[in-house]
Image 1 (tube, rainbow, N blue to C red):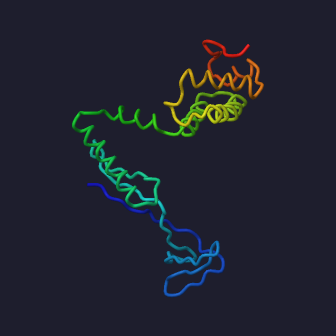
Image 2 (tube, rainbow, N blue to C red):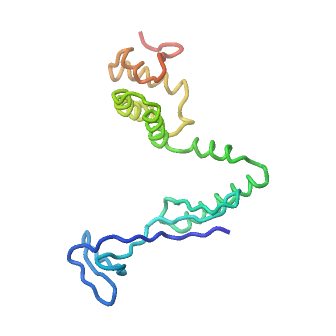
Length: 191
């Protein structure tokens, strides 16, 4: 069975802090804060987010941020991780199946960040990366694309029509948004 915890770390003591019996007290953003001292001029802090600790299908202990402050939500996340491990162990799913499912629901921003890292590693020119970092988020925002399943030919066709009519973009500009070459709607809805 896995467990939940909050990670601890130390940070420098803020200006104006008072120390009494190993506890530092200070005011931050209008609220009184306290922290247990950890050596000279440092104190312990606890992360707001829960960490899920579980054993994967290969017997390796893993710790993953649940990205939530709510303990119940973190517990549900942990149960989901453990269910995935059980399904892989039972041969119902493979790890690749689970990774693909996670990628499908991941935000488009995460995929874009991974894509830009890939471009840099591949040696794509800085100018191209800069252009892509400007254009792709704009395209996905205008087309209301939040994750991979939102991308379809009809979604892109509607975006092209809107780009042409509403945003007054020409064919060359629209094509510059499409990596790998030219893309035009199957049946143009504009003349």
